[in-house]
Image 1 (spheres, one colour):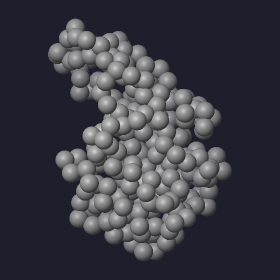
Image 2 (cartoon, one colour):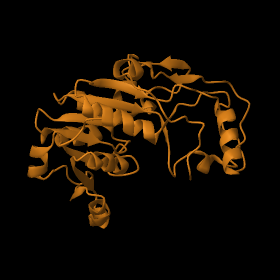
Image 3 (cartoon, helix red, strand yellow):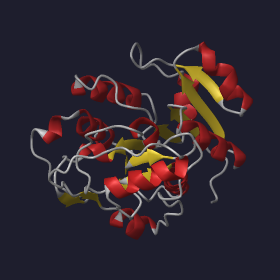
Image 4 (cartoon, helix red, strand yellow):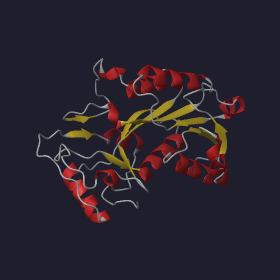
Length: 268
């Protein structure tokens, strides 16, 4: 990576945004990071982030000096107000207007944008008018409509340090779709892809980011439970919904190499 001497603003310094900021700082970039209140300001300062307070539920106003100096804007936070998709899109639009037209925007969306049905889903999938009204779809449209160069990553189910769904599924009963496919991605591959997008501003567009191996839910969670010493969840024997999210485009266009296998279970 040759990413350095950039001014990067990260909206959402959480499980993904925080280690991303640390990678950027290690490569001699200036990183501004948002917090919702003053409680985390010192935590960000300790790793070299220049923090600022913004609660998007109340205001979208970015400090002018930060907005003007930002070469790359990264937005990585869960949608606000899923019951009102238009509201989150408006928040993003108001946010984006404050940054220069030359700002490169990287936005982390989700493969949850695709319907829960059998199919092999690629970025070219044609959504119905009802599907286009969802919070994720409208959020992505807000990014595309900003007029700025942008990279949208549709992240699969996230796993990584201190994060794996088996923590919440252990011992559960009557889970559905035992033969359905897993569509997960490790934090490490998310960080690599975002860093690669920052490094080469020509890599714009929308990309699924999912590890290209799709074990069944039942076998995957059985293996995870054995690894961690948890009680395995129990599944109902119901009809299979084989929903597979393709990552071929990101591998072809980015020449992106996935490095973190989803069956190498992270430390919890």
